[in-house]
Length: 235
Image 1 (spheres, helix red, strand yellow):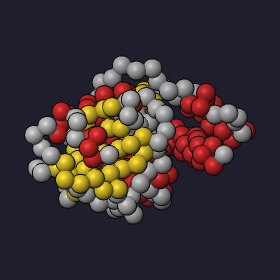
Image 2: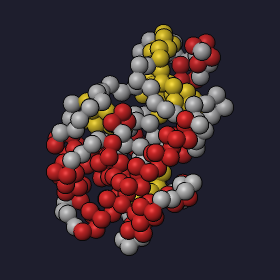
Image 3: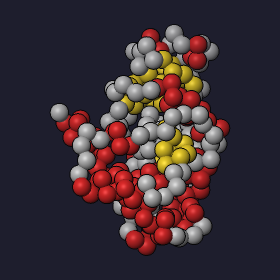
């Protein structure tokens, strides 16, 4: 692998010293620490097919807003991407300071301009339960708030380094209702009602009936989507 990687122009004047499989791995990629004479990079080898050009472009935009690592290279033919390696910690539980940091980051992310067709969440489901149909009926009563969303905000994709916070693994990022990201945080970070209220107030600056209704519906949709996704992986 190392000799093949050395052929990229990126390493013309910075020879590769080692390529090490990282302990923490995701479902969609194999992640390696690639060390050169002068730098550290993250090498991601793709396991699943996805729109990697879109991912690369989105991450470039997020990097400019200082909420993602810098993507250097995308090689679709060999199913890999190389990004800057960023140091940081994955939290097991988010405190108020962490939630405040994350709310500010999401405000930045959701303001990034992008031209893409919004995801149709209904079409993502192979079947719908009564409760899921009810959740979709609820969100239809409110204004659609499509923005650029990360769509996979589990704790392994949130990296903390002092006062800085960045997101990794952008393969599912696309245009979606902002509430999908907010619901994702509430579910994946295991927020209780008090923490959830704090997070929503920090993001919106207020609480309204629409906030609570949409959030509850999107939490249900997110949980159902995750369940279907994991069931598909096991087949």
